[in-house]
Image (cartoon, rainbow, N blue to C red; front, side, top):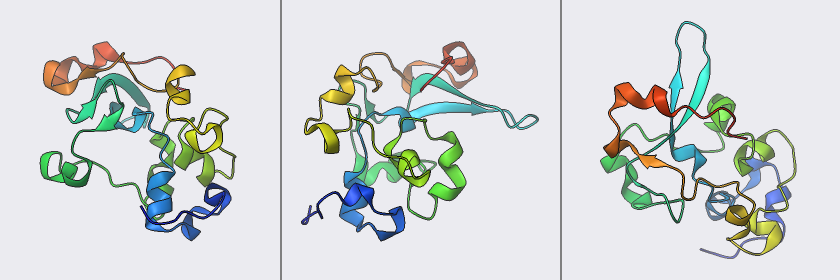
Length: 149
């Protein structure tokens, strides 16, 4: 990564450099959870079924740079696309918070100085997800999460 500006995360998303945009990710892994969206109602439910590329311990993609080669439907979050998809991002997501003009949470590594605080605070998916490769898609509704936060 190139040099990041001090407190770049306080800037509007459109003003971030590509490296700053990537650095904003809090590493929770929640965006890699499969979601159920009901066409008739528009209701959205998160499941604890993760993308097959998510490492459930590190909460990181195992092939981030090449993820779309393996998961073509993987949504690429950008300053432009967030306008359309912010509604399905978790309420704790740094991108969603900044899109909504809110500050980062104290557990975010850019604030705390440690990548572990998100796990210590219980915000990440560490240790409680199951890979989609282990669960048939027609059973995902059995893994719905009540409140993702």
